[in-house]
Figure 1 (tube, rainbow, N blue to C red):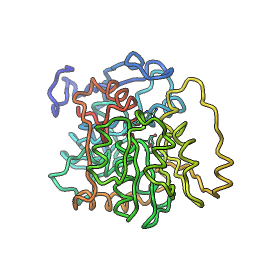
Figure 2: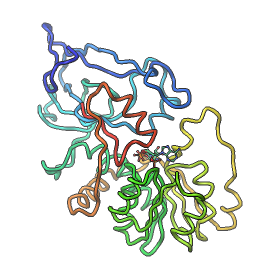
Figure 3: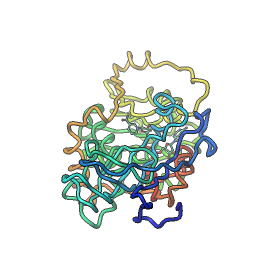
Length: 344
Ligand code: NDP
């Protein structure tokens, strides 16, 4: 049954479908391990009126799953997450069989929905564009870059923008949006290959934070006048050093703190107050869902720039649902260039 080809659900004699799902077997301690996950089979009920049956085609592995699992999940729960899924059976007139949607149904191959939480892909989505982009550049990570830069950093043409984890799903869009917005862009990433990629997609300066002898010097060399905007995906030591290189009245968008997600013991200071006061900085944390009511606007803009070639994308595709834990762990280790995706 587990080897059934994609697109052909296991319809047993009574019309049931068996889904595969990854469960959090044990809360992560430090860095997640494959033994923290369990693969389960779940029999789905027959569809009732108003419901649809979906099959996941692409699933997303994201950094937020690490801290959110700790905060929101209990052992035995299905891992949280989003997917691009295809409707394979419908008793809901709003959804036709064969249509693709973005769902938030966790790490599972098949699921039943009443349609309320399903998001259709924008109607202007061309056949030529991978639908997996709805989980990356034209999905939640792209929207994070868009609203974080426009609404939190409030970037203006001519300013200098710094972004870390710059070759990842969010960071790569941040840098390119800042270029579209007429800014100078500096990015940091964890390998020379990633640095080369950043230069290829238009970053003005990029460096490998793992091999520079001094982060402070690397940041200073890349922009001797300092930074107006800092889009922080990493937190921890990087942010502590970067805050001192902000220009007066600089803005810091606190998007993520991936350098701290796997810490068993919370990191201690240095503390932000002195640079915040002396440079009169603004520092604001945010979660992309604040702008859910503007999702369509953001997606439309991102899709347009992708189609015009102004935003380039790269996806790190892992084949096979059974490899979801490995893809998740690999992403946390920095193995991904661009958005980490699992193709079922
Ligand atoms: P990425 O595609 O950037 O993948 C994660 C990357 O983080 C890795 O590739 C790795 O790149 C880098 N990384 C891992 N560990 C460390 C470390 N110790 N120090 C520095 N870098 C590290 O993920 P996303 O683009 O999806 O997410 C980026 C950040 O944005 C995360 O912090 C995430 O939680 C946050 N986020 C926040 C949202 C919000 O609404 N606030 C929404 C979406 C994401 P490298 O090789 O460069 O080290």
